[in-house]
Image (cartoon, rainbow, N blue to C red; front, side, top):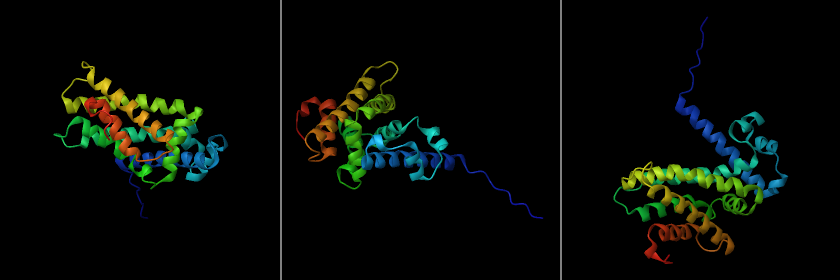
Length: 208
């Protein structure tokens, strides 16, 4: 009798599947909150949309608010990775501006209206604002490490990378708030570029 041995999945594949599930849950939570209102969304609605168990959801998130805010955390993490991948000789101001602006390009271009509406939801919902601000604080450490690598600074001894990381995340938040206050008119990526350059290169003033 032949026995079929099932080979375990490679660790990299397992991790990728976990990340895909986490992303799918976060996107479903945001989409449902945009469509129904946050207060009308249950965890069961989110898990049903992704076809996973409630236990799977709780492996990743403590609640729907954290799930939605994860999208901002993921966007910030991707911005830090993008910064690390920018050309070594590129001015830091340009590298930071482009790395962060690119993460908002799809939403601003209307390619995914749920993402655009989700950004507004996170900025305006009292229930989500705390989680949203938490993701900004959590993003500062990894960003400071990349800034330190690009500038040759020591993130444990030098204040500059940490101050700049905090200032850049605040600039992105301010640009997003301004974009919403003006009725989501204009280009959010362009506003983010402008805000980040004003932090990293103050002589740029208000030039876009």
